[in-house]
Length: 310
Image (cartoon, rainbow, N blue to C red; front, side, top):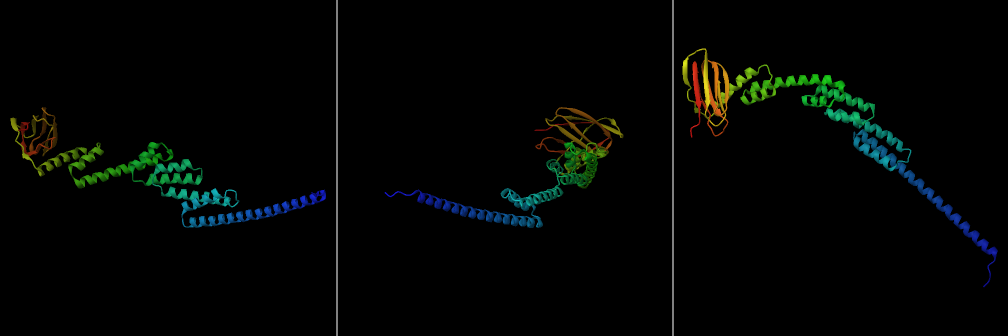
């Protein structure tokens, strides 16, 4: 074998090294060019998305704009242009929250805006909206819920005043409706809601009269006359009523006075009334027993005994 000289070996190695360097430089040049292209494409994408978000804002699609800007921030966080996305998103988010505050009709939900956001504009607008709702709501319960929450005490006096106004108006409206309907059930519901109403005595008298009217308007048996005892008295009369049924007995008198007497099974009760002509009804707490009704001229002492014949 012919030996290779050291000179030829060195020359070959030098050529090989130069080739590697040239290829390496070529690779680096191509790689740098590809990165620049990628960055340009990504910047163009950011700009397009920014423009899209601005169009969404112009069209009042604030949720869509926020989603677009969030996408920019998430995908392209290292670019300087993303700072524009951050600033725009903060502005859009504030506008979106302010619109929600304006649309809100629930006092309790507005507390969340005050507690969850550090933006002064949002906190101030939420307080203003709470004040607006307190002054304009037609629901006394909304005001009671606010008072019970013990939040934002600066509005408590306003809330109490508004609630009193609403409750007073509600009472007037229900009274007017009861007068219009003028049936026993409507008046009973009114009394249940307003047991301290100044006209309750007259209302209860009217309820008894209406209950008597309803029994006379339906199916009933003729009520037996009470037994006269003692001397005549044309000023006041006493009636002793005995309940010999197994049910609770209700006897109503409608005339110079309106009286409702409720007697337990087996019990006896005496009632004193003005003398005069009365419509009288008797009923028990069983749908299987017929009501009784009739007229009575009371002018002295009487006794009645109610029982059920099989």
